[in-house]
Image (cartoon, rainbow, N blue to C red; front, top):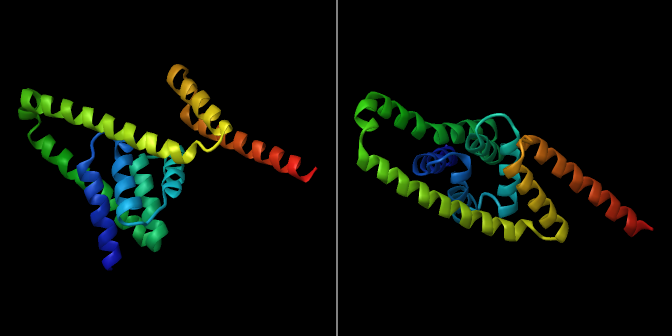
Length: 182
């Protein structure tokens, strides 16, 4: 029961202290799950995040569910998921109660502008850190650049980019193994 409560509290903290959705949670996920709790390696977090990205639903919730499931099975997945979504439910409920007062509050608007800037900086820091671990070959760098360009400047669905990249990685591995065996 102690670890279930720990899963809930960790994901409650992540869900309550990050703004902007799944990508903005990546720095805190990395800090909490990789550096502080050692529940995942950076590579595991990247894999988990990639799976969360290409499955239906919210990335952060998918990630929380996966980590909880990996730690304590189905009940761990439930506790982690509840921890992740509870802060949002509480905040949205409070905002709904006082929506009219929040709409015209210039202080809140400026505070959120500052928060968004910090979120961007933290996301960039995490992306750079994870890129150092992930871009281990010229092939990986080329795939990263091509997918980035396609994602930024075309309407190609993200899921298609993920699937094509996975297939390309598998095909490349098969060809390299074939060359070694000759």
